[in-house]
Structures are given as C-alpha cells and as structure tokens.
Length: 168
Image (tube, rainbow, N blue to C red):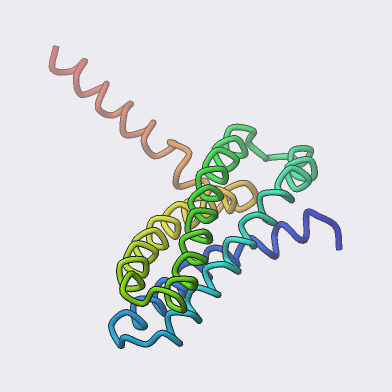
C-alpha cells in the first residue's frame, strides 16, 4: 500500500469520526455521563489524527491523479484549500477534546461548558471535512462532477441570454 491508497482509505475517518464523536458527545452531555463524554472525546481525537494523516498523504495522492486523463487541476486545488480548513478545524476539535478530558477528571464544574463548545466545534468541523470529502470525490468520480461543473448552469444561462435578446 502506498501513500495514495492510505490517503483514500484514511480520509473517511475524519468525516465519520467527527459526526459520530459529535453525536456521542451530545448524548453524553444529555445523559450527564462522563464515561460517554470521554468516549466521544477519544473518537474526536482519533478523527483529528486521521485528518492529519489525510492531509500529509494528500500531496502524494495529488501526484498520482494529476497525470490521469479527465482530472481537473482546479478541483484538486479546491480540495486542497478546503482540506487545510478542515485540518485546522479538526486540530481545534482535538485540542478541545483533550481539554474536555482534562476537565472531566480535574474540574467537573467546567466540563459541561467545555463539552458544549467541543460539540459545536465538532459540528463545524464535520461540515468542513464533509465538503472536503465531496470535493475530493469529484476528482475521480465524474458522475458527481458532471452535476457541479456548470454545464447545466451554462445551458440555463444561454437560455436566459436568448430570452433577453428576444425581449430587446
């Protein structure tokens, strides 16, 4: 297995881990269960590590696919840009999770606030990492890309332009 395969394999971890960790954390906050919150924090930390691995293996994956026919450099660049945002968000979630773990053990009075903040951060990071994954999927999955490249929009714009000319 090379770094490209590792990239494709590990990229799903931050996506599913951030939403699963967020859901478990929400349940832990609702149930007032430190054990459940701690499990969620561990899930979110693992997701953060997965995001780091995904980001570090992304360059090798780019080198592999940019030589293939039908691969758009602009889609790769969009994917890279959002990958950085997703990585930063998940690093923040990982740090917040470490703080949440610490507070659960040392300062329970602050643990609920830390858990709520971490939950909100996990939801934001899920949005960013999901969009990053969607953009990454477009690199090789033309069935997704064909609906978003603007071909439909271009034909609609042409119809609108023709209607405007007819009205003049």
